[in-house]
Amino acid sequence: MPDTPDMTAATVRPASMPGYVLCRIVIPLWILTGVVFKLVSLTPKTLPKNIVDIALESDIDLFFLLFVLVALEIVAIGTMLFIARLAKPMAIWMMSCFCAILIWEMSTGADSCGCLGSVSPPPWLMLTIDGLLLLGVLITGRPFRSPAGSPVPGLIAAAIAIAA
Image (tube, rainbow, N blue to C red; front, side, top):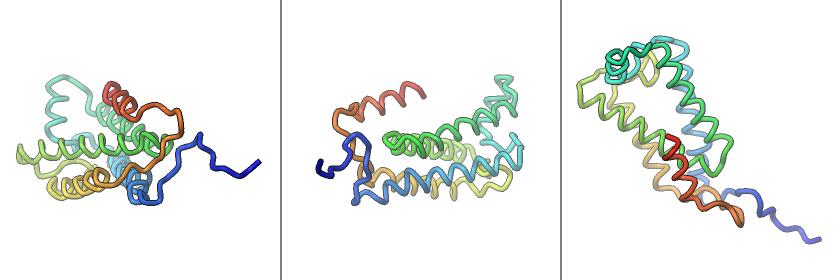
């Protein structure tokens, strides 16, 4: 039997290694950094001011909100690490959400975003970092070759959009 590559598994394209590194290593580690800082400081008041204001108006417990947001970030990290074909769509989704929240915070004059708990840098700096990460993911090629007979990637993106 000749040696042939296993076509049932997604494989990394050599030309798209930067996309692989961004989606599977850099962005999950960046999000994990935020998770760790939020859990170490354990201060929900440092979350984005606009989100805290909405939570307070809606009588949502801020600690509950903090843990839900951290849990969602952990799910996103797990998705990027363990589901290769969803890594890029999840990275785009997370960085887009982060950028949108940061723009919202900056538009209302917030001086801290809470992205890294109580040690967060100014929103403009976080927007620069998150925006560059998002741009990097958007300009890199598709990091994975879909195996023969796999679902259409558009269906996967639609499922993420519906789930969100």
